[in-house]
Length: 357
Image (cartoon, rainbow, N blue to C red; front, top):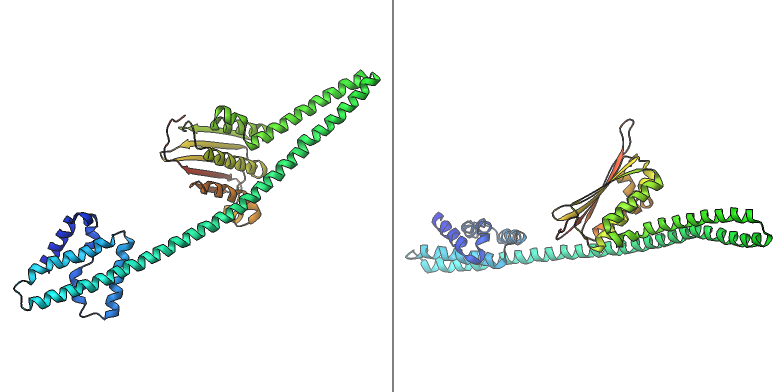
C-alpha cells in the first residue's frame, strides 16, 4: 500500500491542473477509504465522505481536482493488480468503489456550495438592511442639518438684517431732522451689525465647506477650519499632515471633512479640552485621519448603546464604512489626577497613493 500511496502522490504533484492542491488532496488517504468501505456502515461512510468533500470545497480545492485525485489513485492501483488472483474482480471492485466514493465526495461539494451560497445571501440581505437603515439615518441627518442651517440663518444673519433695516429707517428719519450725532452713532452700530453678519456667514460657509477647499485644496481647507475652530473656542489645535497625495477622491475629502467637523463639534461642546491634535497621514494603501483631545473623555460602549448620544458617532462610522473604511473611537475618562482624552481614528483604503504633498 505504501508503494501505491507514493505513486499516487507523485501523480498528484505532477498533474499540472491540480498540482497546487496536491498536499490537500493527499490528506484523503484513499487507501484507507477503500478498506473502510467494507467495515463501515453505509450511512456513516457516506457522511464521512461528504464531510471530506465539504472540507475540500471550503479550502478552495476545485471539484474536478478531487475527482481527478480519485481517478489517479485508481491508475496507481491498476499495475499492482496484474497477475493477481481474481484480478478482474479486484479491478471491478476498485472501479465501483471509485464511482461510489466520487459520488459521495461531490455530494459534499454540493452541500458546501449550498451552505456558502446561503451564507452569502444572508450577508447580502444584512447589507441591504444596513443600507436601508443608513439611508433612513442619513435622511434624518440631512433634515436635522437643514433645520439647523435654517435656524442659524434666522437667529444670526436674519436678526442682524432686521435690526440693520430698522437702523437704516431710523438713520433716514435722523437725517431729515438733521440729527448728525445720532446718524453717526447708528452708522457705527450698523457697521458692527454688518461685521457680525459677515462673521456668521463665514461660520456657516466653513460648516458647509470653505471656499479655500476649491481654491487651495483639501489640506488647506482642514487647516483653515482648524484655525477657525481654535479662534472660536480658545482650544489649541495642532495640525500635522504627512505624505498626503496631491489629490484625493472628492467623496473621501467630503467624508473626512464631515468627520472632522463632527469630532471638533463634540470636543467644543463636551470634552472640556485644552488641546486638540489633528493628524493626516498617507500609508501604503490607506489614508488615516486621527483627531485626539486631552478632554474629560467618556465611556464609548455606554454612549454607543444610547441612541440619542450615539447618533453623531454612528453617522461618522456609517459614512466611512460606506467607502470601505473604518472608524475607531477610544476614550479614557478623567479619573482623579489621571488625565482623560479621546481619539477618533479614520482609515480609508486607497488603491494608489501617489504625488504626496
